[in-house]
Length: 288
Image (cartoon, rainbow, N blue to C red; front, side, top):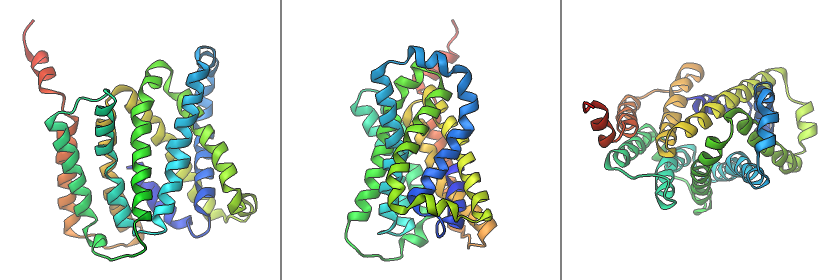
């Protein structure tokens, strides 16, 4: 839901702040929000953190934020927002397939059906936008699909490190790694001059995006630490619905009946995907 709110907020500033610069500011503010909470446990985490794990967390932070958002922005320049959102909604399905391939996820029929229902709900919520034609080849679609695949891979690979180290320092370090990468990548957008010229209103919106990113990313990693990657990423299906609802309330965008049906499909998908396995339920209710 915070991702959907961030998309709506980004619409206010995207014309004033270039994509990579906006991403850098977003995660700089996010890192600043997480740092005070990370400092008390940072020393203990650094003492036990292996060098190999440090490199892995750096790569995951850069992949999760910098590379993913760069590919997504590249795709959004070539395909419509509706098509891009639908392709990106394959995130949980890709997570399920990657988790199963790496032996970290058990693919049950209920979980798979829940994921597919959530994707169907996203498709229904975006149906009016999907009817708009666009051209330009397949590079845009491939970039968005690659961004979803990178996000899925990072979600699967994060869990061992989250179970080994505290969530807050991991969140702060991964976000810092992405800030350093984005600061270099955004030099092509002349971000120092751009930042100096940002209006007060845009700064307030960017601050909201940054704070919501810190809160959302912490809870994202907390969930990945305690649940399977697919059961976490399936909630991304709420992203376009949240954006549509907030767009209707704040931007006076039209809200169709199809969105309510989409929300029902997504709710059914989330209910199926997050139910515990049948064997676990049987063990819990069996006496002794």
